[in-house]
Length: 529
Ligand code: HEM
Image 1 (cartoon, rainbow, N blue to C red):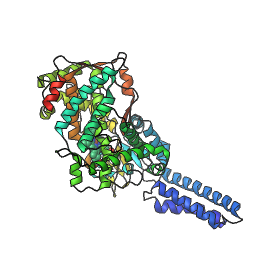
Image 2: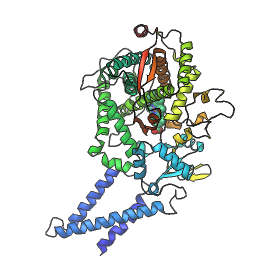
Image 3: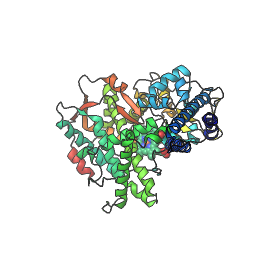
Image 4: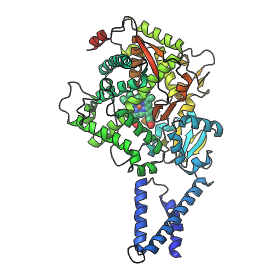
C-alpha cells in the first residue's frame, strides 16, 4: 500500500522543488526511464517474480504520471498562478504545446492578432508566456534576455556572434543576379520565373562569400547557387531546420526529446552542413587577398564550436529575411503600379547611367526607396521574438509581470494597428513614411516597426540588410521592366505568407522581366570588375 502511495507524493515534491528550473526534456525522460528500470529491478524484475514486478512498476508509473499531469494542470490553472490574472485560451494556459501547434500553422501572427482583439493587449499564450500588444512592451527588450526558445537544440555547445559588410562583393553579386534572372527566365517554358527562388540564391551566395563558407565534400567553391542552383538543398534544409526550431522551440522540453529522433533529421543535417563548411573555411589555404568576415571571427580567437554555431545561424539568418523582403517589395510594387512607376522615376533621376556602380550613400538618400522598403517590412515581417523577464519582474502598462515569464511583443499586430499606422493600416501606402505622410491626420509610429526587434538582441545586420535591399531593388528596377503572370492571385499571394521564424510562401511569385532599353549588363559587369 505504502508503495502505491509513493507516486502520489513524488510529483508534489517534484513540482514544488524543481518547477523553478528549466530542465532538459531528454534528461528528464532518461531520468524517468532509469527510475522505472530501477523500480522494476528492485521489485524483483529478473527473478521469478518478474511478471508481478512489471505489473506493479507499470501501475506505479501510471499513477505517478497521472498525478504529475493533474498537479501540473492544477498549478497552471489555479488562481494563485503568477499569470492567473492574464486572459487567454484555456489550452494555452495548460500546455506549451498549444503555442507549438499555433506556430506550426505559419499563421501565428494572425491567430495572436485575433486573440488580442478578443482578450485585450495582454494575452497568456503559454503556461508561463505572454504576448503583449502594446508599444509599452518595447522597453522590456532592453533588459530581457532571449527565452529558452533560442537554446540551440542538441548538445552542440557553441554560441553564435557575427558580422560585417562588404560592398564591392554585394555590387558584383547583384549584377550576377540580373544575369541569372534573365538566363533562368529564358529556360522556362512560359517565360515566367519563380522570383523568390533566385533571390534566395543571390542572398546565400553573398552571405557565403562574405563568410567564405564552402562545402568540403563536394569540392564546390562557396555556394555559387546562382550559377549551379542549390544542388545540396542547403536552403530547403536550412529553412525547414529554422521552422522546426521555431515550432518545437515553443516547447523546448519536447525539442530536447525529438532532437534524438528522425523527425528532426533536417535540423541535424543543417547543423552538420554549416559546421563542416566553417571547419573547411578555418583550414583553407587558398583564400583571396582581402579579409572576409570569418577572418575577423577567427582572428578574434572565437573557438571552433562558436564559429560553427555562427555558420549555422549565418547561412539562413543573414540571407533569408533580406531576400524574401525584396521579393515582397517587388510583389507590393507590381500590385500597385503607381508606386512601381514612382520608385522607378526616383531611381532613373538619381542614376542617369544604369551601367555605372550605384553609390550606397546615394541610395540611402532616396526617400521613396526607403519608404517602399519600410512599408514592405511593416506588412510582411510578422516576427515573434520571445524574451524572458529578468528576476524581480517588470511592470508594463501598470501590470506586474513576474520574473521568469516569457514575453513577446505582438509585432505584427502593432505593425498593422491603426494606433500606430493610420489611415488604412492594412494597405501598402509607402507615402506614410515620407515627411508629409498621407496628409493631415496621418499617424506613422516609426518606433513600432519591429522588423529588426529591439534591445541587446536586435538585428546586428540591419545596416547591411538595408544596403542589400536598396541595392537589389535599385538594380532590378533600373535594369528590367516587370510583369506579373496573367491571372496572378494578388490577394491569395499575401494571404499565403507563412511565418515560422523563416518565411514560407504558399503561392510563388511568378514574374516576367524584360531588359530596359539601353541597359548593358556586360558593360556594367566590366565596370565593377
Ligand atoms: C530584412 C532583413 C533582416 C531582418 C528583417 C532581420 C531581422 C532580425 C530580427 C527580428 C532579429 C531578432 C531575432 C530574435 O530576437 O529572434 C535579428 C537578429 C539577428 N540578425 Fe537580422 N534581419 C535581417 C537581416 C540580417 C542580415 C543581413 C544579417 C547578417 C549580416 C543579420 C544578422 C542577425 C544576427 C546576427 C542576429 C542575432 C543578434 C543577436 O541575437 O544578438 N540579419 N534579425
